[in-house]
Length: 207
Image (cartoon, rainbow, N blue to C red):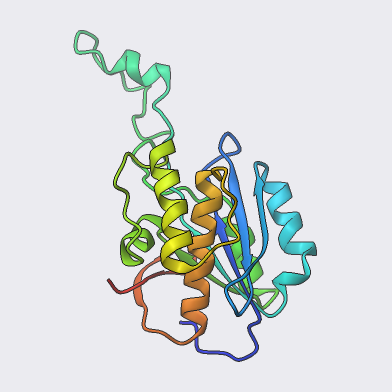
C-alpha cells in the first residue's frame, strides 16, 4: 500500500487503452492541482518513452487505469458456434482467452517501473473512480455527451478552469481523473484494496 509522502511533487494519471487501435492519455498534476502536461498516445513505445524520459516521473505517484479487454470474437468462433455445426476436438474455445475481461497491456513495463526503478505505481478502475468522485456517466460511456458532461464537471466541481472550451478526448479526461486519484492516495487518504492485477495493487476510492 502507498503511504503518505512529502517527497511526491507530481501526480501522473495514465488512462490506458487495451490496444494501439484506441488512444491512451497521460496527465500530470502539481501539488496545487494544476495541469502541467496532458497528451495523447497510441503506441506502447511512445508511452514507455514518456515514462523513461519525462522529468515529471521522478518524485511522482503514478496511477494507471486497468483497461477492459473488449476484443471481439474472431470469425472462426462465430462459424463454429452455429447451432447446426458440431464443435470438433480440433477447435479449442478458450485458445484466444475470449473470456478474459481485463487487458494485461503494459503490465510487465509497469511492474518493472515499480520494482526495479523504484517508482510508485498503482492501478485503478476508471469507472469506479468516476462514481466515487461524483462524475458518473449520465449518458452512454465515452460518447460526445458523456465527454462534454465529464469535462464540464471537472471544470465546475473540481476547479480545472484551464481546460479548453473545445471538447477533449475521453482518454484525456479519464487521465485527469486518474491523476486526481494519485494525488488523493499520496495525501494519505483512505483507500480500499480492490484486488491485485499482474503484481500491482488495484486501489479503490471509498464512495
